[in-house]
Length: 254
Figure 1 (cartoon, rainbow, N blue to C red):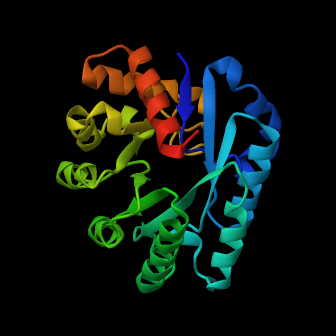
Figure 2 (cartoon, helix red, strand yellow):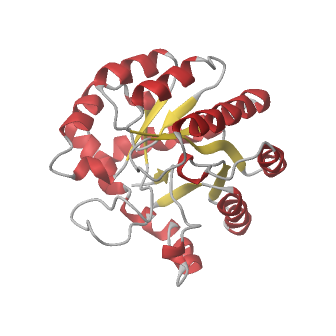
């Protein structure tokens, strides 16, 4: 099984002790490609540096809603300069997060989200969306930029919203969360979702799939996401891996 982990944070401090060794081990574990999105300017730069060091690693650059508290529009120009790197393939991770009470104010999150959607529109790049407890506001902003295509990473919305996003031409991506016992809503979405709109990811070092939940996640476990989707769809895991690999390559133009 050859897979594409379309969302993994190897810039995270959780990998400080062995980052290079973990990444170097991925091809022999069946991982053909990895996309590392940034969450602020520093991690976006790190994502680009990692993409320079490993031929199978690509980067996205962006400011996460939880990290936008100090935002100024100068940051846009720094993101624009990072995008000039040939291995940067998307703007992300961007979006809205209303879950954490100490996150930046919602109006600021929305402004920063819009600024980065505008950047993606200007540059003709796809976006990687983080949407946590902000489904309607997130969808409303997405609708305002019909020229921008994107993926909802770690999709947690309803089947109804999934149908809207598919109609808009968007992709949905799934993590190890779908292996958890309370994952009924996501599995309902996967059951309906056309295979050409699905991508798989780990969100490493977070959201480790069963039976490794509670341990640090890495791309070597993304096959467990493919296997869960295969059970829902009634197809072979190799087929899910092949299709999601092609979907990811097409989406990120790799």
